[in-house]
Length: 184
Image 1: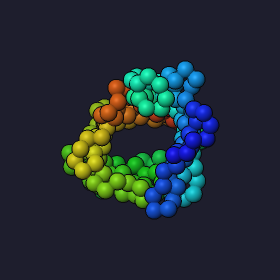
Image 2: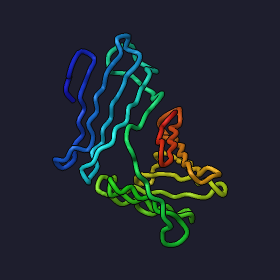
Image 3: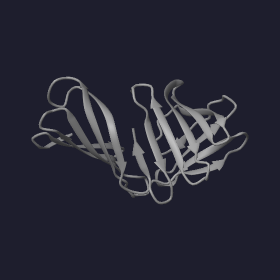
């Protein structure tokens, strides 16, 4: 983390010498809003950008405090491939991240695979309706979040609602071939 200006920081996260994420944080003058331009670098060298805005829910001044995300905007294409996997389930493949998440609908927790996937990552899920799935993500057996993935009736838009166990508000990701978006 490096101070860039008053109320501004550059945050770089690395693993094994490779940059994973670069974030530019800016604190509003009144100290109530924090913006984050978040740029992950994919294993294939490509990047995408996410602009996130947080509001302070605890703390009084400066960066220390509790921040809750209120909006986010994806500024580039983020591709996810969904394919049947062996047995009863689906594989969620993120090509740029070289990551695969196999989700079986038999209550077992198959392992996730990829360069930056934490050891012990697993997911299990089930069908809620003809167009909706619910998936529970775990690390070392501890639930991290639940995701509800819904395909529109016209089969053109996919909406993912992520409910992290540590946050009060869910994250909604909606995308189609022409307009990816994230809202909360």
